Structures are given as structure tokens and as C-alpha cells.
Image (cartoon, rainbow, N blue to C red):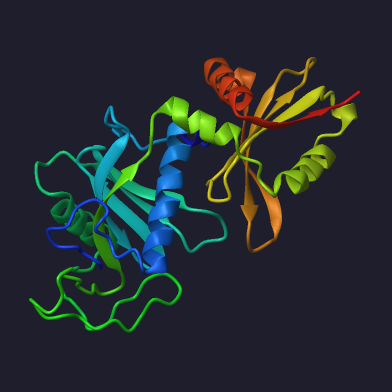
Length: 272
């Protein structure tokens, strides 16, 4: 919700849950990051339209990972989503659609990534490519591998289950975070908001290294509060403002974001 407000394969055939090839680091890394991004979206009410979490906090999904993107489809979650992962910032949602067609997650994912990329996904090649260097795994013939691994043109796909937990559990996880980048962010935020600008305090929400955005709340008694969204620009090597929300632009949204910041506050800068 917040960004919409602020800014008006490996296919384990027949395998489920924890049957993924855990020895492949790139698969583990992509799945771990996806889980972290989903929790971030839940925390900040920024999940794609139609997204839902089952009562037990666990979703079954099919994932497709390519060098420049990661996509997933989940009928339990009700959505298909694609993230750009090769840019100057952390994962950024680039496309989404509802996932309520009654087919398997894998079948819907194949259609989703095929339509989104404009290329066929059934033309299997002899090499597996993932991320920044997982290549050269030959395509096994049917019956050659008990895992049924198959190589896709530019990536790999697999099915799994991810335990997201409920909102209260996610809040507790964020409350325990102590990001190494917090001191650098505090220094940058402090110099960007001098005392003579009427700032009384700045509260920074805790964040994970994988979070697409980092948020903080500026208390300005005279002018009114401001909610800020920033991200680390890898190309520039600097924090960058993505968007801001003032009280006049959306008082209810601003109050909700303030409440979340307070619930997972990592640091508060006070100006005398």
C-alpha cells in the first residue's frame, strides 16, 4: 500500500515443501530473499493487490529465478508476482496478477512468465542459468534423476513452501533487528534534516538488508510530520530518497505508517 500511496528451472516434479535441492546456494539465496521481501510487504501493508496469507502463515508456491528477475505464483496467496533483481536497488516489484484459475502453481507460473517476458518457456535448453553464475548443469533425461530437474531457457523453477508467520511474529522479528547500516543511515538522515528546518525528532524503523525500502518518520511540530521512504543506491553508493508523504497528502495513511514505525523503531534522533 505505502508505495502506491507515496508514488500517486528447477521444477521438482511431484515434489513438495522441503524437497528442494538445498545444496544449490543460489536456490537457497533466492528463496530466503523472497521470504524476507514477502514479510516486509506484509509489515508495511505493501503486498500486491489480492495477496493473502493462510491462517497458519505458510504458503505453497512455484518460483522462477532468472539472472534479472524472480517470479512466483501461489494460489494460496492468490497472486503471481515478478520482481526485478538486477538493478541499482533491492528487489523491486515490476508486475503482478491474480492467481485464481484453479490450475497448479507451476502451470500458472509458466503462463505468467511467458506472457510477461514475451518468450516461450517450454523450449528447454541444455544449460541451467541462475543469478550470477549457476550454469552448466546438463538437462537430465526422464528417469535419470529422482528429482526431475529440468533446465529452462534463462532460469530455473521449483516448488516449495515458505513459512511467513503472522503479522505479530513479523513485527517481533523486526523489533529484534540491529542492521549494520543503521549508523550510516542515521548520519545521512541527520545531515539531511537540520535542526533549523524545524525538526524535533526522526524515528527510523528497523530494516533487513533485503528490504526494498527503508522508512523513517520526521516530527516537525510547526510544519507537520513527514513520512520518508529511502533506499540504498548500489550504483551511487549512497542513500536515496524514493518518496515522501506529508499529512496534507494523506492523514490516515501517514498515521498508519507512523504507528508501524513506532512498533519497529530501531533508532530515534532527537534535536535540541
